[in-house]
Image 1 (cartoon, protein in one colour):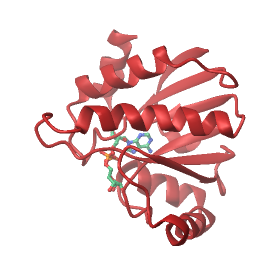
Image 2: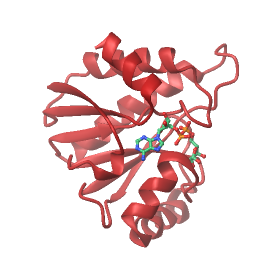
Image 3: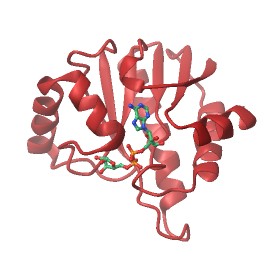
Length: 167
Ligand code: AR6
């Protein structure tokens, strides 16, 4: 499995799936979530609403999927990162779980490539360096079957440089 790093907008990615840093409601929001819903169109929100009526949203650290709507990616995997408090709670485990469950879901979908944003490092306030370490470690340790490519898509300069150094 290849690991790549790019700087840019995840809504432009051509990977089979892109991951969204969503919230428990699955009803959209700001940041990367807002960008994905804007670029992907109303179908994604409709499918999120259907998931909500089935299971009532998405718990922190878990992942669900919808189609990609108007995006180039076939699927959007919506995962809910933890809100950073002080790091003594479940934050680190939950962030690791986001990456792990997204990979497991991608394998269930039998896809070959997936792009991740820097989950929880925006409004959820997770320290960027620790988040990058967790993301990279979790993906490096993952024993993939169908997935051949994982691409980390960093939107901001700080995350890009952190990932570059760590990778
Ligand atoms: N492509 C890639 N990364 C992006 C993009 C983009 N187009 N836009 C922002 N980022 P955030 P969170 C980066 O706040 O911290 C939403 O309202 C950004 O630079 O989007 O997990 C949800 O609905 C940052 O590094 O997500 C939730 O309520 C990273 O994406 C809440 O925010 C994550 O920032 C989730 O907070």
